[in-house]
Image (cartoon, rainbow, N blue to C red):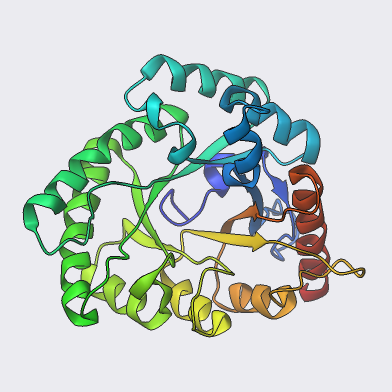
Length: 296
């Protein structure tokens, strides 16, 4: 399994293991699923200044024990191209024995625009974030293909944009590109699957998010996106008294993930408002570990 298929090799022993695959006697057991934390879990704290990006790694590691970190460029758009900032962030994570895995990226220029010049501008606009992810030692950046319009026409534009960006990401930075279900046509799992087939590049994959589907069966959507999944997003918002997430059946969803044969990183993105982010992340962590133990 290489970098483009899983973060296991990248993370080594630094990430919280969930369940190990059965191996023959004498063969060292390796985790098949590892936990990460998405920076957006601290959206309110980062926006208010209660937490800063340099403080984020230590906050996660000390508060949850999880040592794999995901980022969001919306919290640090002023740091685009700031090599020193990302080198310092890398040192902070290295000192914690942690790893950086991915940056969620938003862009003013649409990668799936009908205008080829705008698509080119989008590709160029992602370069600072590809460079940042390379410095941080991660695997990929997430991009959006969620422009409105005719689904067939937008599919063609998305394929063109993704092919161009994936070529740049791999050739110039050694990184992958992932697409999330994140609005408009991208919140249709079948549409995303068709885009992936048409792109036809192993360096371009998906980031299935458990709760980002609009008017679409989330279980079906995740199942449709899993064949190309490079990272999975375990989004959570609220829990009942039994510790279950009230918006999605994690037992059903994680079984879909397991049955797909996926092996890699699952990032916790807590978006609740009733409890502190660390508490929400830990509740999600506990639920995932419980379900994985049940699945065996």
